[in-house]
Image (cartoon, rainbow, N blue to C red; front, side, top):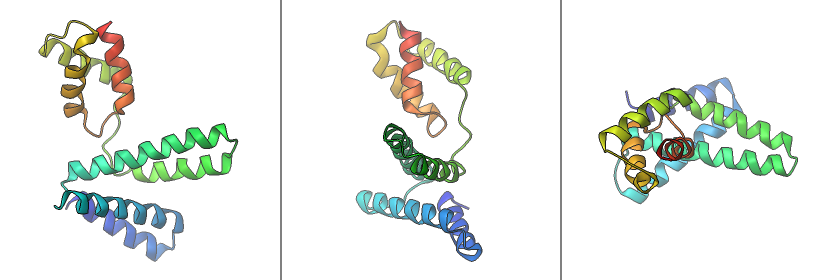
Length: 147
């Protein structure tokens, strides 16, 4: 069963249980997936769907930051709840230590020697970490390791 099928099933379940918050989040996610399908003119793979989910989570985190600056704790809580629902559809996130270990391997594999090789390291690392780590965090750790 594909990830999209899981989302459809959970959305039907939320409708039956009258879980308005979860239903709203899943409808928004289905809409984002459909928009991506239309843009690419093809059915999405599970990896592409995970990319859409990751971008939705990233948008939510940015909104939390903005709402926090604006002292809107009610909206911060709402966004956090939405992120929690969306995170269910992604593989478990790696810890900082796991990311460091993988980045060290990547740096050795491509013989990176300094900050000028950051682009090559990021390209290789993000291919291996797809959906399991935040790009900003990976970038921050890679910069630390390369300097």
